[in-house]
Length: 144
Image (cartoon, rainbow, N blue to C red; front, side):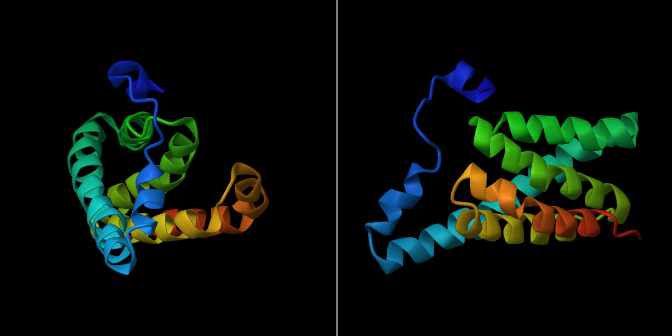
């Protein structure tokens, strides 16, 4: 919502996938590479590598919650904000606990794959949330 309010983009940020699917297997493969692998790496480098690291100076709660809020708001659409919180909260905590970005990157990529394929609508998300939530919570609780 904040992104839409600031930049006025009302179109769905996920509409590129339907356009890509019409382009054939090559377009889907390239989109998978760029949107499914490289974008999560880029987001983790910035949000966990920079934002979380800076905010952790003010304590673990500020670092984890603050970077999660920024990450979610910059995703723009309300449903994407929910998914952003679901991936960002454990990722920020993993960053804090392990002092490494690679667990975050792996979590983000896997979550993106599962959410792109497994959560077609919010009702389905709610029905599947208990099992996915446990996995994310278990990953989040991994300690150094």
